[in-house]
Image 1 (cartoon, helix red, strand yellow):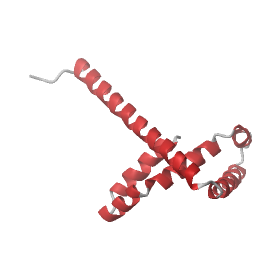
Image 2 (image 1 turned 90 degrees about the vertical axis):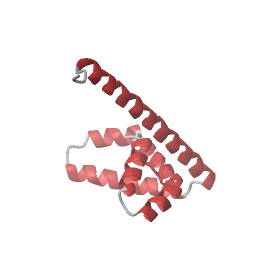
Image 3 (image 1 turned 180 degrees about the vertical axis):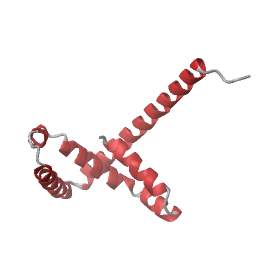
Image 4 (image 1 turned 135 degrees about the vertical axis):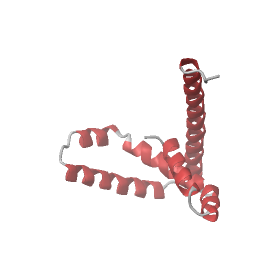
Length: 121
């Protein structure tokens, strides 16, 4: 999971909705990207991951995730607008990098397909 991937999923899901919703959401995506960066970074916490992986009970895992989301929501609310803006820029950067990588991977796959299965003439 990455903030860039989450932003990509969010943008593509709203793109299929009404055009006005898409435009409004797209203009305010910096706040969403900031939240995603904060959320992803919070879930990367080693202590949380050790607790989560050390628990087999699905209800206990759900409780751990819920507590972590509550903690992250509270800490996100305390961030300054400048910190949120910086996190939004990081999310945007990850999104652009991810799209570039996907484009390169797609080009490579298409090239391999054309080499292994040339078009019929």
